[in-house]
Amino acid sequence: MAAPHRFRAPRRGVRFKVMPGSLRFRLPAVFLLGIVIAGLVSALIAVQLVSAYTRNQSYDELSREARGIARLYSDAALRAAEEGTPAPDFAPGALELATGDQLFYVGAPAFPGQDSGLDRIPESAVPAPVLSSNAPLRFRFRPPGTTQTYLAVSQPLRLEKDGPVLGAILVAKRQDVVRDQWAPLVGRLAAAFAIGGLLAWVLGVWLSRRISAPVEALAKASDEIARGNYAVHVPVGRGGDEISHLSERFNEMAARLAATEERERQFLMSVSHELRTPLTAIRGHVDALRDGLIDDPQLVGASLEVVANEATRLERLVGDVLDLAKLRAHRFTVQTEEVDMGRLVEHAYGSFGDEARRREIDYELVEPVAAPTIITDGDRVLQVITNLLKNAFRWTPDGGSIDVVLAAANGTVRVDVVDTGPGIPPEDVQRIFSPFVSRDTQGTGLGLPIAQELAAALGGRVEVDTEPGRGSRFRLVLPARGA
Ligand SMILES: Nc1ncnc2c1ncn2[C@@H]1O[C@H](COP(=O)(O)OP(=O)(O)O)[C@@H](O)[C@H]1O
Ligand SMILES: [Mg+2]
Image 1 (cartoon, rainbow, N blue to C red):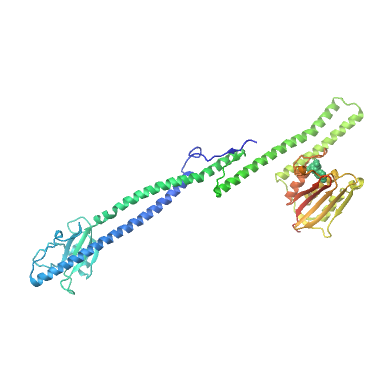
Image 2: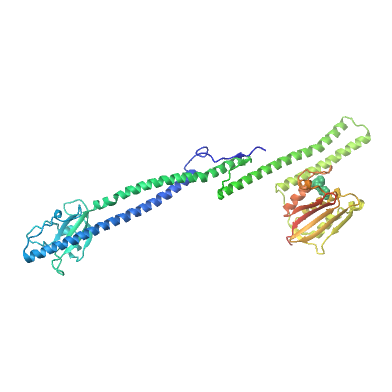
């Protein structure tokens, strides 16, 4: 047999191209897609959280500033009202505001007739509750004369503790300034995302190669098997995973197919050889008779006898070969019927009675009191027992003994054929069940193989217990599926 062809993991693109439909593409693609989706979702959440956080931070800072300035402002206004001091300068530059923060004022002027430096904006520019609320408010608005949106905090202004709200101090910050604080994060996230995606792709490609290489090896080996070449072998990974299990089973399957093919080939060769032997003999005798080489009537008679015998042998051989071939191809219909094993064994036993008497063989049948009835194929069972009996009578010398024993035990029914023949040497015991193995010049060597295949077809088996010089015990074991 040729050395099995080994399928190595193919290098990239050797035969299985990395095509959109291939495992090699789909695995890393799915991997990458998963990473991209997970990355996008978490980036989105991160951006949202950070932007909300920076916005809140900005609002808090604006609130602090608004509160401080409002206190300053109301103190100054009180003092101006009580002592007539001039309005202080509230121009943003004079106050310690955070860079870029702007100061506005809405409502009634606290220093009538004086300019406090505050940038007064009309009430319509801010949301309505700013002037009616007693508490600070946070909101977004667009001061008149600008195109920018501002985040703002309004702090209501009172001159006395529980007095009416006079107006409101607004501290505001441009929204894009706030956005600039977290915008770099997006860039960094995008970079991390790209690196992550790249790593995912590399990992995915590596992983997919590990997974798809053995699959591709299997696919190629399957192609070979489909082409009829069973001498293949795929490498089995050490992982003990599903794929190495598959590879292992695949190799077993290929080996079995190869063995079956080899067996069939051997069988065919043996069959043709076995058929040719009697044909050659017939041909030789017929040629001699036709050419008039034999003229002695006695020799002619002997020749014709040989021809007739060989023809009979051919007939038997062809019948047996067909039986065996059918059995092996499982093209074999097994009848299921109630079979009284007692009667069946008696029948088989009875057909060898004359020969036993003639050859003075001590021939006995041993049966249990209540013979079992089983569901099986009676004709086939009879064929097996007859084959075993034929062999026993073939090999037992005159005056010997042959016993047929029927017994039922442990869910099985067994029929033993015990003889006092020469027995079989241990090295031959396995071989005698192979086709065409025979020490009998008249035999075909198919009796036991057929018996064994028949027994298997009936769910049973044929066992043998033999010792050279002490005889043999052939046993048919059948499942005792009750009637
Ligand atoms: N009862 C037996 N005692 C001794 N040898 C046996 C017995 N039965 C079978 N054998 C051996 O097994 C061989 C194969 O038997 P079988 O398959 O029935 O073919 P065949 O009877 O045509 O030779 C026989 O040739 C014989 O050598
Ligand atoms: Mg035989």
